[in-house]
Length: 367
Image (cartoon, rainbow, N blue to C red; front, side, top):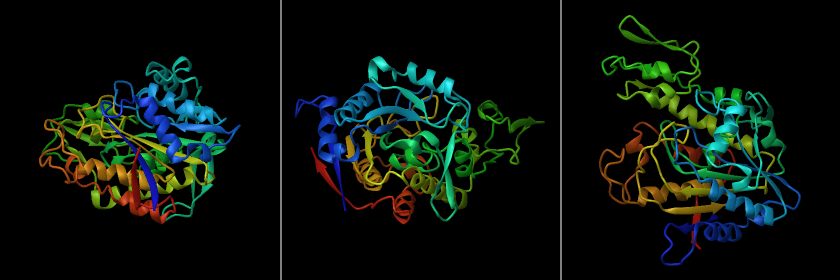
């Protein structure tokens, strides 16, 4: 059973600002034992897609950077390029997006390095011996780093149910080819629901969707499974086979998560922000209102225990009326499957335990 530390949202009772909470969390959870003097430390973040503002603030990441520097390490902010269209598909656009969102040296006192290179091809093969992969393709600069601090915004995800530290490792540390290996899901069109608005056509990065006569046509042979079409459709007319494709996506993502930290035993530290708990991933060029109120910031040396604690805290919170929660906003009711029917969020914990990433059992400690 691993300890998970929480600094609750709000400042009135303890008169603490966010930086003081982050400092206390890093101290309590033992950051200084996970990074060593002289380490080149990857700070794995999500810089946010252009148009999205729910990602973890650069000011809060800067506070984490200061704690890493206090331990004598040399941090760099990092992420990997995306498959889909937007502001993070190559390193040039990605760094410009990061800078525009405040991840610049005057704010963070830390350089930005895109870990899989200019076009997402800078990768290393890492052995994992899982159900789907014997080896996975991890961004080379993440493999090369001496230690890693994984900073995650805990929120919903349309296929995984939620995204936290495990998804930040699995999808977030994969090279371009690695992301393709995980995205084996293939969408299908619900013709009775489709209004042929063309939103999916504009969203597809591989130009696999077209208007054939009066119907939308999806070219599955060239589809990369990024599911931006499903995420963009205003009428939910694009779907996947949740029983098979959804489970396989999670299994593959967790095997990649194991590869991301395969050479970081005792050298990885995790911080999750349970703030702006939006229904969508930060990869979308928008963000909806949160599904529950802000809860706080959590830290642990175990990504499985950390994500499980966050998952439980969200489910135990009262939902926000007017959010994408369709009904039943009461405390103690599962939130993510109500927003994303068909997803199996808890499969992440089962798979992660099987891959040796940690344990879902935890002790929650207030700081």
